[in-house]
Image (cartoon, rainbow, N blue to C red; front, side, top):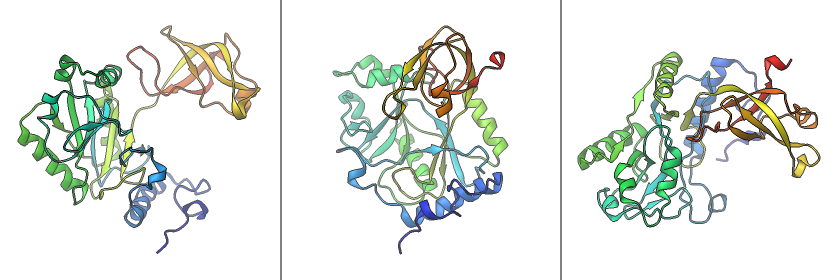
Length: 309
């Protein structure tokens, strides 16, 4: 049976004209997505991925008003995604990771999916360290492989998570850890868990449907839930646009309240690009935390700062 054409069905939960009845709509969006996923889940076609890149399950942004019941929740580790195929570690791109032989010798024969992680707030150090060739033994000695999936294993995710925890415990190696998975009873409880992780320096949460089959791509099974912060910055200048933005603003050059210089090129409407905030004006932007250098992650223009009006 051919799946319904989602882009032409006004009643599909993600259609832009669908009525926004918050709690009901969000719950229905997840449930309908899960039902469609059971019908349509399949490996991504080869032409849709880079040559040699493994097919992976990727997370979507969690709807803030959605119901977390039916999901298993874990911390979102700000490390480097790494696939173990029983012989070697690979990046998302499919390129091999130059890991020390003593590290890979401790990994099990079963394929694993997870993050190479130094600790909360240390993404840049993790990313730089795993790309060194030859590898730095001192760096790898401090690294942990936080795993969250058993690629190729059968059963629903709840069963795979249990098997993964048992496998990691069996190795008895602290560097190999199964991401703890917990149930959450309500949106309020989910928010409390998110606040606790973020307060401790974490990036956010991952929600994986407990009944999810093995799947790849961005489907209804995996979601990421991260806080969105806002802050103010001083506009220093303008960068010209390219492509369809030729002759308009491409990005704002700004300075944060901490004195960090960076550019903001997203969140700007066509009107903003034609008549952008002037140098000397203050703006409010949203972001998802900071890099180790203090640069806001995923900074997006929101509006002129209140003091500017």
